[in-house]
Length: 234
Image 1 (cartoon, one colour):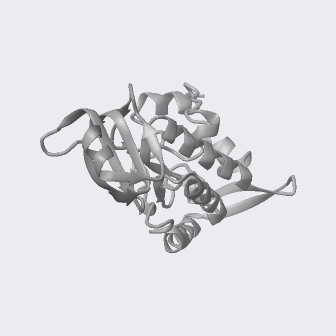
Image 2 (cartoon, rainbow, N blue to C red; image 1 turned 60 degrees about the vertical axis):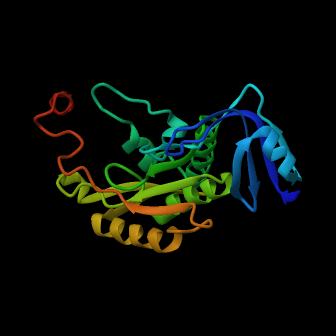
């Protein structure tokens, strides 16, 4: 019998192979972090000696899901939205969050994904609007994801240059419970994005990737949109 690290057995296996085979009493053999065999429970139990055994009776075993789009920072505020003012991300992201917030948010977002069966996600922390005025916020998010152990594609990039107020933005930096105003430009966010790419792309054994998140070229509240008109009126 060959030695393996883990045997998951007695489960319903969704193989997702070209034939979409469904194994109603199936097992998966894992060694050194890789799946080395998939088959019936009886066959694999006879073939392998395992250090760890998971009984998947009455359970479905399937490949991890992929969350193709989410904004970093929303795990803590749960996507709160105002019908006239839109997302509260400007006030909260830019003025009421610390680097500890972004670390905690990264942990919560990654854990929520695991609980839902998601093993790979996209986390937008750049573009419009997001917190790319300082690399530390993305650094904290990436560190949290690394510790949880899932795969993450972190989207970084500059804000929308077509929004006049976005050409020179202000944020609040909190250190030791004291705040200071930080004025930054679109060019600085590009520099910060490059820094994050060099620091984190392909890190955590390739589990963390960094991608360019394009700004919204029409702006958050374009004049022709319903919500844009309401926002302007308010």
